[in-house]
Length: 356
Image (cartoon, rainbow, N blue to C red; front, top):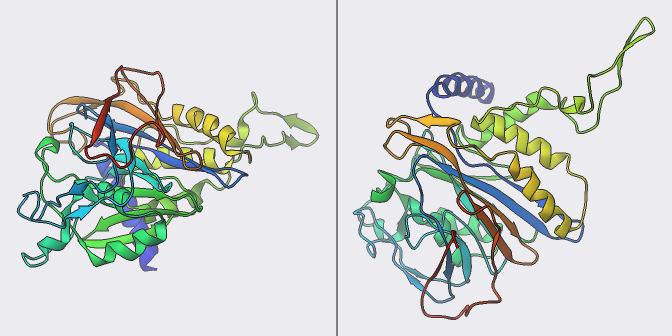
């Protein structure tokens, strides 16, 4: 009864928030018949994130940001795994990426629900800022199980990020090469980790809400329905595609979650290289044109200014071949980052511009 009431409450809250707040990123994963996996995601925000491809070598030392906002006062660590991915604002952090062990994922904006832990001064040295979460995970762990074991033993604090205009509130989606997927949220100051059997993720409301909402669309299918027959007369659909009639089409997070889930669930089995090509076409359905979403400065998605939210870049990462591919709004050509063309034991971070 509580879960049902909670879902209804969130439905009402979301319907009110959705009138004035746009949403952002969409992510999904496809499985290959050869044991591989392909991860895809889009990135939208109201101000330019100025992302670049960031390459982190093994053994690179990072300084955790504590509750005072100072680098080094939090949980410091040394990278165990080399990592490639997309950063933001030229900073040494990841909003999306993959490591050499095949663990991939991203941070997805969640300004209405993300609420981080409140560590004490004594606990600050065992904490990191929210914007460092994916960086910490990708440089330290190889599997979802390792992440599930480690995160309860540390804290994620609410130290603000100047470039973000406040606390970087998000949720994290992860996929490993063994076939496991995980959603990590911080809700009401508590860590919530949920196995993601479908593999899709968008933004607010909480992930549990999305999982309940998907049950409202069990009628959708990639298979066309037979014509309706009444007293011997047939009433066929106007064209092919009637199996997906009723698929929500707006840019709101719940609608994008359903679309992504239906595309994933109805994608036929194939090898990983075929699924990689298919992933790009699925992600095309979430490309938000410039001007389709206008945000005012009060929106948690606008970066504190009046702005247009649009798809800044799209990623497709092959967890089998360990290739990370990205295309941007300015450069629709695909750029590829992998682990074979740079020194994984180097001493410094490397940055590659998306516009080349």
